[in-house]
Picture 1 (cartoon, one colour):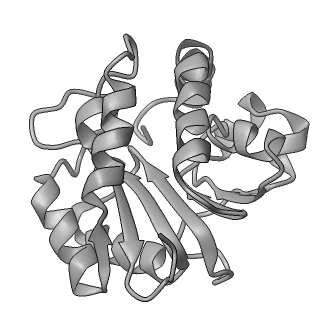
Picture 2 (picture 1 turned 135 degrees about the horizontal axis):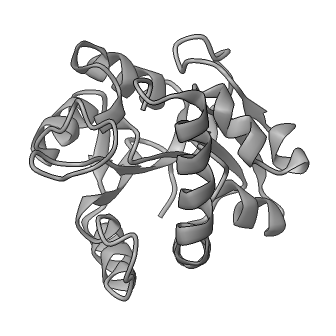
Length: 198
């Protein structure tokens, strides 16, 4: 993404928002029905496709987005809830009931992978909703496609483990998607040990 011009990045954000908005709203609705949470931290939130329906549902939401071009493609209301900076520069706040990181990991430099995992795990109160492109998945700016087992191993080492039933249910809902089809295979629900959430 960073290798694209400002104009191309703006077009990409606007196109992505229009193309995937309805499916991401459906995704958010399923999450709201499946998980119990009040506060949300969305790392790599782009134009707030998941943040918007969460806010409408009365959730307290904070987003982080590195690319400042995304701000120009985001509603004024959402801009007030997003920190436009690198995830390493974002203040350590929380914990949050739900931490979200959707299709972000493949866009960061490989050497920062564990840094990203630590940034997410340090904010988890109960749940993590995570997806990342595996090797071979095409996409704009994919520089860090890894097998899912690597991410799950790093999370597990920090006492954040996959919720098999919730992951299965979310992926089942995502099977109907015609556009954001990668979410069907890449999405995981994880839970922090000792969170007390069932």
